Length: 259
Image (cartoon, rainbow, N blue to C red; front, top):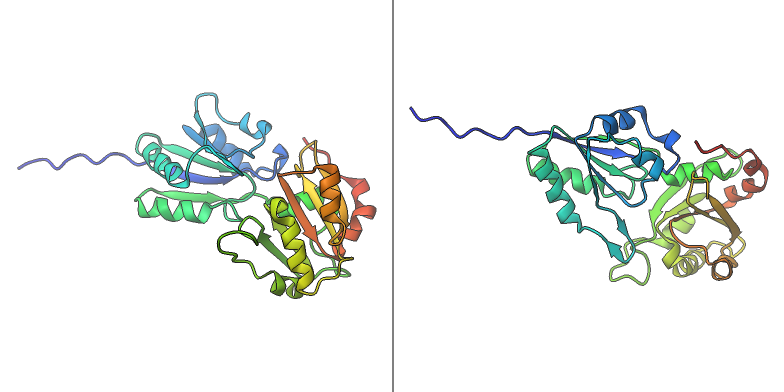
């Protein structure tokens, strides 16, 4: 009787949401996993205070993506996670915000499952809610907004295959939260106005949300492009559009403190 080949022992990959930047906003479960991890594969926008929570014994691998500067292709990152799961018990894929909100967490989880690797998601607080909150802008309010749309601006107009129906969004939501849209904002603003939004519609750009350097730029659809050119505000930034932005002048005086 011949012995069958011994199968390698599989670890587990955890897709952990780091939250928007303030280290006080990562979940207790996410923090505990960083302290237990054997390997942490992290994105560019994970803040230094959260990276400092990682066990000193863990292997730390940067796999971040920024516009025009991709340190690793998506396929390479997934392959790396699978390889590490065959040699380590706890592998953390650390993502800014929430893994399932424009974080490619669903794609990575699908690939890991197809690769036969155990995987679990640990949600995080998304920047599209937290950054406006730190700037005194709730995304819902009984007097201003009963609906919210989260949309990516990264694949928007001017790209090879526009997927976002900006006209429908203009008509269908009280509050519009745009991720990764600052580079395409002039075209997005044009499409939203063509879809029926007034040029007087308020818009807020929030940069480095929930971190000590958070800044807000408040304007209207008719003025914001010129304001961006004057201030040179850039990514990473969230755009928030709707009458709800008017609350910034009232509520921003009670800004939460970053830890």
